[in-house]
Image (cartoon, rainbow, N blue to C red; front, side, top):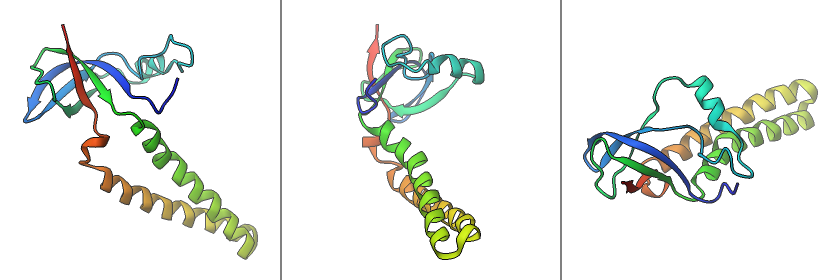
Length: 146
């Protein structure tokens, strides 16, 4: 599975909010569980998430409540956000620990790891606020299924 390609999920329109729609997602994960390279994440989401998942997405084709739709997450968004949410904090932790170790031994490594993680958390928070509201990063209704 190529995580840089767009991801699609089937959902049903619950309600409308201006140019957005509230979608209840049917199934879980990326929907590629049975394809080569699929991770089987759908089984995990069904096990740990019993309440219906609803998301606010752009309603480009003008879907109406009750319509079955395809929700699209643009290409690259998943990998960019995974890198931001997981990679940057890990990098901050490791670089902070390394620098702390070089400057002050084991105690410095512990303090440096904490400081690096804290700085990375601030960077993630700052960058997340920049990305919010950017339509290039938002999921949208790709098409209405008949």
